Amino acid sequence: MTRDDPDAGRKGALPAVAAIAERIVLAAAALALVVLGFFFLAAALMAGAVLAGVILIRLWWLQRRIRKAEEARYLTTEYTVVDRERPPTPRLPPGG
Picture (tube, rainbow, N blue to C red):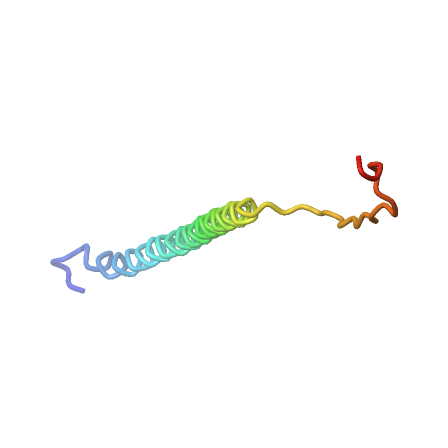
């Protein structure tokens, strides 16, 4: 420090204050980026889950439609076989 430069004392103190302020601003910016990254990741995961759900529902719907078409291809029903006994005598008169 010389007499020629009266601001020499203040110049030494300013970089320290500027460095602290710079660190605070950088820390705030880093924290903001971390928070934004977290919310972006959460939104991306939710969008992926919704997209996966839509795809799974679509595949289920297609399989259901194909299964219904396959079932409608063949006619199916329930039935019972009834055996009738032959009448013991003919119904028409003989020689008639």
